[in-house]
Image (cartoon, rainbow, N blue to C red; front, side, top):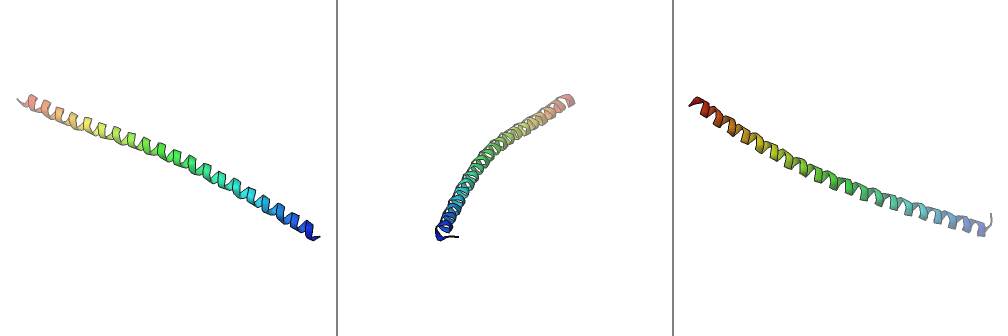
Length: 76
């Protein structure tokens, strides 16, 4: 194989590798962006669930107080 052909093959190989690395970088960036978005959504859902849980705990506590009051009224 002549020197010129070897240089052309080498140049083509380097360009191909560069193109593949660039595509892989874009894929990694897209996956990172999607993952970050999903994490943000999960954090918001978790915060919403914690608020709902706090609301339910408050309702249970209020119900307990009401039951205690009703029980005291019945004993009178």
